[in-house]
Image 1 (cartoon, one colour):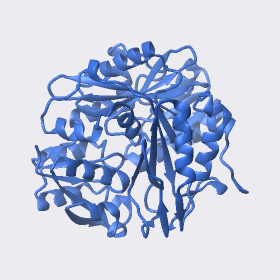
Image 2 (cartoon, rainbow, N blue to C red):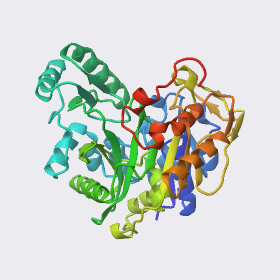
Image 3 (cartoon, helix red, strand yellow):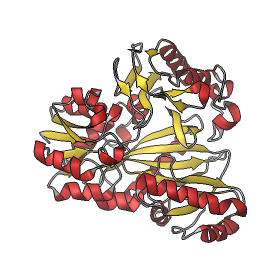
Image 4 (cartoon, rainbow, N blue to C red):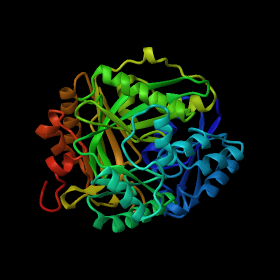
Amino acid sequence: MFEKILVANRGEIACRVIQACRELGIATVAVYSDADADALHVRMADEAICIGAAPNSSSYLNAANILSAAVVTGAEAIHPGYGNLSEDANFAEAAEGCKMTFIGPSAEAISRVGDKAAARKTMRDAGVPVVPGSEDGIRDADDARQIAGELGYPVMVKASGGGGGRGIRIIHNDQQMKEAVSQASSEARSAFGNGELYVEKYMEDLRHVEVQVLADKHGNCVHLGERECSIQHRHQKLLEESPCAAVSSSLRRRMGEAAVRAAQAANYSNAGTVEFLLDQRGRFYFIEMNARVQVEHPVTEMLTGVDIVREQIRVAAGEKLRYEQGGIWFNGHAIECRILAADGERGFMPSPGTITRWEFPSGPGVRVDTGVACGSVVSTHYDPMIAKVICWDQTRDLCIERMRATLQGARIEGIKTTIPYHLMLLGNAYFRRGEITTQFIQRRLPIPTGGAL
C-alpha cells in the first residue's frame, strides 16, 4: 500500500479522497491555488503546496506544477478526483513516467474511452447497444449535415474528447448546423483542448441511467448497480438517485452485464461509469464511459456499502477487488442533491462570496460531502458546486422525505444556493411518482429567471 498520496484536485472531492486516505493510514499532500490557500482540503491534508494562480489553467490544470509538487513531497501516487486532469491520458502517462502511480485507469484505457467517437466503435464491437450516430469524428458542418440527413433530425453534436455537458448542441435543421458546430467545437476546445465533435441521433423522452463498475488489474470486474441521472439543467446534473424507478431486477442485470463488457472491451481497471440512455420500452443505448470517479458516486456507496474511493486506492496499489458480483447487495434507496452557490431566483446565476453560516442537520441516513465551511470564500474561478447532500432510507418515498427534512434544516448565509429549487423538485408530483426524463426540468419544473421561488 502507498505511504503518501498527492490529491490533484480541490473542493469536496479532494476532502473525500483525503478522508479515504486517513482511513487507510496513508499520508496526504494537498495542492492549492492562490485563491484556495485557506481551503478546507488544504487544512485537512498532512502537507500542502501551492501550484499556481487562481485560474484553473494556472493551477489545477497545470500538469507540470502538480507533478513537480508530487516529486518534491515524495508522493508515491496521485489521485486526480474528477474533472480537471482526471481523464487526461497525457497526465496519467506523465505521472507513470515520474515513477508515480496514477489512481485511475491506464493512459491507454483513458484514451480508448476518452475519445467518445472511438469508444462508440469499441462498444459496438463488444456487442453493447450504441445510440445511432457517426462512426468517427466529423470534419466540419457539411460533414455533420450529411450524417444528420442519414439519421434524421433532431441530432446532437458532442465533444469527442470530454464530458460534463460541455461541447454539446442539439440541432433541429440544416440552418442551425453551422453555428452549432462552431460553438460546440469552440467550447470543447476551451474545456478539453480538443475541438473534435461527433454526431448522435437526439432521442427524446429518455432517461439518463449510468452503471458504476469496479475493475482490478487481475481481470476481475463487477458492477454496483445503476444511478438515475436524468434531472439535468443544460446537461449538468442537479439530482441523482439509486436505484432507478424504471429499472427492474432483470433489466439491472442486463445493463450491468453490458457495462462490465464495456469495461473489459476497453481493458479497464479502477472505478469507471458506463452511461446509457434508457427508453420507455426498456431498451438501453451506450453514450459514453467516464474514466474516473463520478460526482454522484456516494449514492452507490450508500446503497451497496462499497467505499468506491477506498477501492480505487486499493486497486491502484495492485490489490484484487474484495467483491464478487454475487456478494453485492442493493439495499434501500439513496438520493443526492448537488448544492450550488447559485441564485435560483435568477436562472442559477453564480453567487460568489464569503459563507457566514454553514449548518446541516445530521442523523441516520444523512451524509454531506463538502469542501467548504463557515468562513470559506466561494470564488468565481471554479465550479459553483459547494456540497453534495446524500440521504438514504428503506424506500424512495421515505428517502425523499428525509432529504426534504435535511434541506429544510440547512442554514447557509452569505451566499445564495439552489436549496430552494431542490425543495421544489422534491415536492413535485411528477418527480415523486418517478415520471422522469432528461427533459424533466424544461417540461415539469423550469428554473425561475425572476421573482421568488
